[in-house]
Image 1 (cartoon, rainbow, N blue to C red):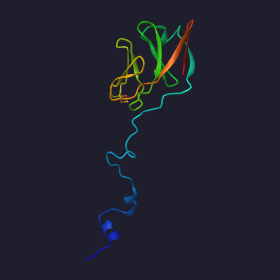
Image 2 (image 1 turned 180 degrees about the vertical axis):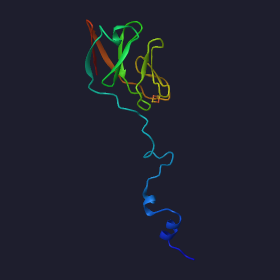
Image 3 (image 1 turned 135 degrees about the vertical axis):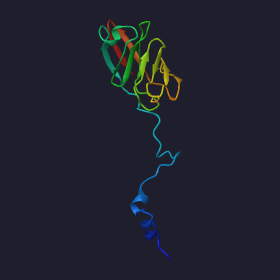
Image 4 (image 1 turned 120 degrees about the horizontal axis):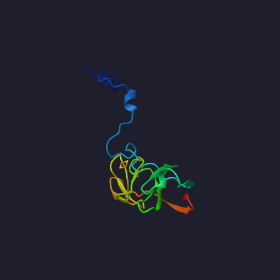
Length: 140
Ligand code: FES
């Protein structure tokens, strides 16, 4: 018995539509997950009152507008983009290790935002900070 392609596919349980569904094969960039995570915020410019809340104590930190703002154990204020450059999970700050740590896959960044441990390979974006009295300005 000779069957044509349509009959063959029909008997195999494969309709023509199923052949049109894209299939991801490892290594094809069009199917792979984008590894650069969430873009760092640009045009950042906001002010925080450091007399209260998380930034009123050394080691405290908070997230605002996609930026993680931290007060180091010596009282210096630092700010970097919050989204891990691996897959975008927000990082936490550890004053004891002077690091930003991603809770998702364990990437670490120093207080300047540079990668100190993978799997992330790109630095966090560092923002400027200036303290006037108790008012902290964070800006690009
Ligand atoms: S999302 Fe941060 S290490 Fe993977």
